[in-house]
Image 1 (tube, rainbow, N blue to C red):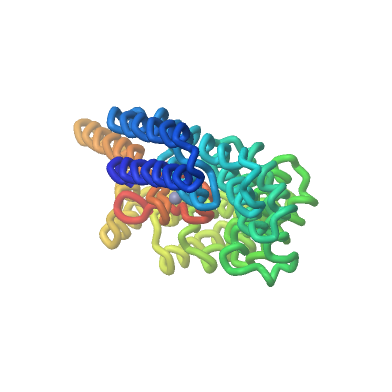
Image 2 (cartoon, rainbow, N blue to C red):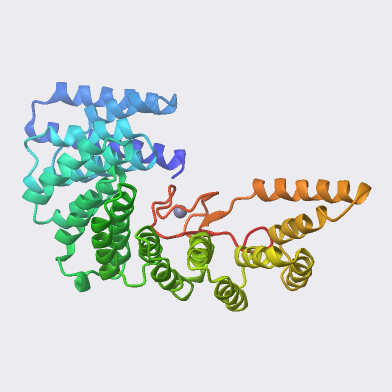
Length: 395
Ligand SMILES: [Zn+2]
């Protein structure tokens, strides 16, 4: 929203307040002093707006526009507008002003409480938001579900995963299959967060329980299968880990790069080099990507550098890519001599720098980019929308 719209909004709000004050003054006959004070607040508020003193203008607005059932929505809308503009302190001031009016009916009070909780979330004061929302869940039948949804947001930001799962269950009932589509994957991510914590704490029994719960919520959860693969490997069952990890490309080929390191480790643990090469070859044909190409080239390289270079050359002709080219040059630097070696090393160095300067991951939802796989996008807070970058510069 532009500043001009904001000014017009506040101007209109103050004008309405002044008009209402004037009207009530006429009705009751003896409110000339109050009328005068309101008119003065209005004029001052307008002055502050014109001199871009927003904070003072808001104060005058609160003074000038009496809180009543007729003006309640105007106050509420102004507070929400301020929150959207990132002016959290002012939004809190407007909504707290509403809550401090005992004359408002119960539902209006609760609406103001919900908006204040949203201000606190936006300002990062999560414990305050949590208290207000918990109270609304218990006391307001009308706002219970909306409050629960915001409570889930609060628990997510506090990384209180068990509480988040409980809040979603309160929202939609306890049985896994009753969860509506958009909540099932989210609930699975919450379970995966708990599973990760358990794995890191070496509590493998709990980890398995959380992974099972994640798969109950969303049986296509790639993340749950990645964790299950890791768990099987940690428990000394690399063959089982391989089976689990090999489900991932069928579920979502975008996550193939994420399975490769562990998959290779597991194949090495069961000493099945041939099986690994066959699997990587099949994966490259079905879902071509640079990570798989480089992994397969490295396997060939262990037997013959020349064969690996020829293989990479063929593949690059089919699917040119920076990472592939970097690896290709690497294969040739060692065997080159003199000036050619220097030139190849220089070129390789430049390509490495170019790759390092490009993000490896991007969010499909908001475009946020970085070099790490985030299951929860740090920017738009969507789950599972960050994927590896494709094309010449990526996979
Ligand atoms: Zn995003």
